[in-house]
Length: 229
Length: 236
Picture 1 (cartoon, rainbow over the protein chains, first blue to last red):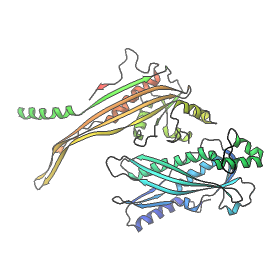
Picture 2 (spheres, chains in turn blue, brown; picture 1 turned 135 degrees about the vertical axis):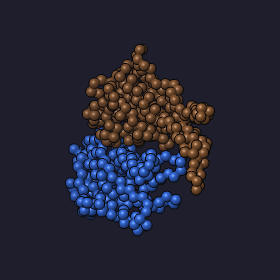
Picture 3 (cartoon, rainbow over the protein chains, first blue to last red; picture 1 turned 180 degrees about the vertical axis):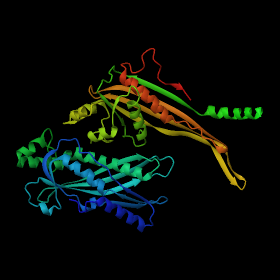
Picture 4 (cartoon, chains in turn blue, purple; picture 1 turned 135 degrees about the horizontal axis):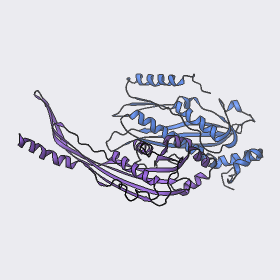
């Protein structure tokens, strides 16, 4: 559930405009907005709670680039637009939860997943030879057991580049979307390959055979120490 | 007056001659498959390289070129295809070989999704247009009596692309078309700059589109005897 009102996008524009005005009403403002597809993958047979922290909803990156301008890049809307369909496609059942404490002991959930955007970097070329705007970002994906134990803390990076044509803001937006799609692709295709996740899925399978059977098909299962059986 | 015209013509001819396009197209088709009615083609850019990638407008130009005209093919939107196949055609996950494609199609739901799009052929575009040389110079000045420029600038752009065609139904590569189009532009300035600009990328798009159409519609991949040959050679 979003902590922002329904017109959160408008609020985000106001925040970006306020930041820009406080710094001299100049600079470049980008609000990354896009529709992201649901991944074409077989969902894992688990029921997951999803925590989207406020920082992710309201993520705004600012950087004053020497000899260029102050850049303000808002990724909040795009984070929600990307991660929502992504998690719904990855897991058999999902439910938005506000915090880990709220689901302590909830037996209807197999786990809780919480993404954070830890790092964001970008580069806008100013030399004639450079043709691409580049964006690099890193999410931290944390999976908890319902009792609060951490299953995995998994850093996932995404890189995107976009041809710099007339409008640098547009190029940054397109590069950011490519980077986010890349990160989403890694999360959706590599999540179940992580040794800790395999062990966790195996544990769920032992507790409830009808849940674990599908997850274990053809997959080696790691024990708690992370060694493959 | 006649002498003036002669001098003007003599000065203009080398400049116009220096401006031109050289085009080389090399098709290589290794099967005799052709596109059937109801089958679609999608044009995608290879985006694995760190230094270059086929420009979005070039991909769109090829897609539009194949779809338009009296022999227009059914072309699926690149963006829509990538969205429907997400996350399997992103830069880090896209199949690099037909073996990778075979592995991908074995994944649950992937083959069914491809079939739902109607796409049988994937055209992978690789390459870019780069400035390979430039020189000369133009000097401009302004005064009370007026303003003007004098000099000559020139530049050369090289559009190098290859289009590799995959048959998703047969899980095989149909072949590749290489295109190398060089364009030399000049801008003389006698009072005012006069740009004589060539557009090798637009030329490469046109040539590659024509050749791809032949590739997808004729078993040999090039025009049968009697029909005009594909564009090649110095056409500047």
